[in-house]
Length: 140
Figure 1: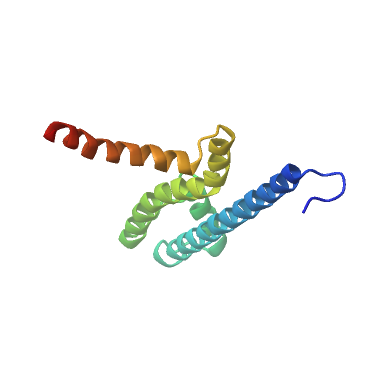
Figure 2: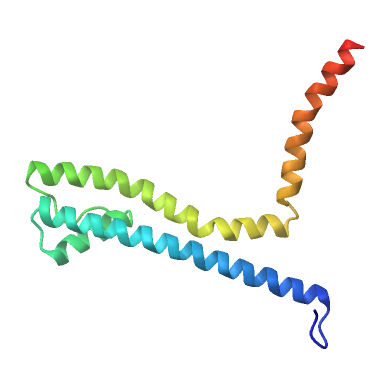
């Protein structure tokens, strides 16, 4: 129901905005959890394998996770192996976190451009349905 002075279009628009904000909050929350877990793994690895103090382990893990590069070079073999594996993981983690955070925004842009999910599904269905029709025409 529309409130006094509001059209039903405004109310549905408000619901869409609320749904978008909820989706954005959920995705940012998931991204923050992934970031926190990744940072925790890096800190623990640098502390136990590279023999860094916790604050130095935090600094090194956060610098690698942000793409800036390490500050302390590990001297032990285990520390070097961990640093290499964590650096590889961090590259993928940054991409995944960015994708999770920006997915609702990109989805909203597609809706603004009137690229609806149903249109995409319909176009995909037309492509798959076109082949059987062509086969039927050939049989005639």
